[in-house]
Image (tube, rainbow, N blue to C red; front, side):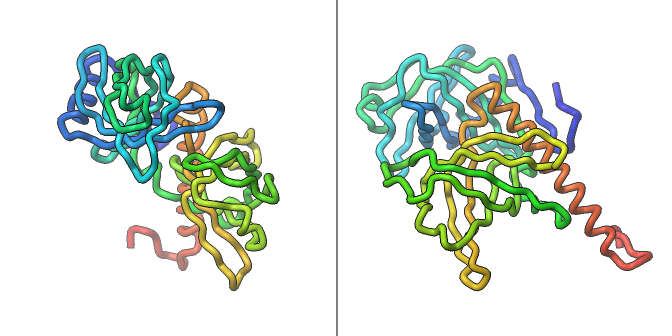
Length: 269
């Protein structure tokens, strides 16, 4: 089944199509990310997809400059995402088996239940789309701890900025440069913004991945990656809204560019 609401269509795979995709991913030893909640905080671990049967998937956790989380347990709900060709594939599953090494915070194998459905999202949706020029979108964001390390609480814990651009994978926020000391790479935020004035707010969580200072304009640009959208029905509903918003921003930007062309010209010239 395919969703027809936007150009950024989500393709849903079930049954043999799902198993064939996982089999292909394991054949190519695809690397992905496993996310899960532990003690109210997001954990993210790089994994390789090793093997699958009709009932289970075997993945291997990979070191990525930090200790593998020791918080994962049997019956733990997890989300998995990996890239395949021109799509990003996401699904929700449950841990049904673990190597003892994983419980000790080391690399090892994890056995997952075969999901009922995989969602294939076009990679185009993960390309950043600027906020249309005639729009101003405020972003409220607040400190939610640290994903990769324990850090000190910033002097301020709640901020407001402007949305610069958006994709299905994250967003960029512009804030005042005077707040620079409040932010650290790996920091986790709660995020709320209303992408179009007539819509309800989008609420999500994200990890700070990039910081860029603009001392001339006295601004700070924060690149934030969304967390956990593939792990629950609610998260995937947010992902669907993001897809629709990115496509709407793209349409508005293209209309603006066309209107700016001299009379008699078009994009086809």
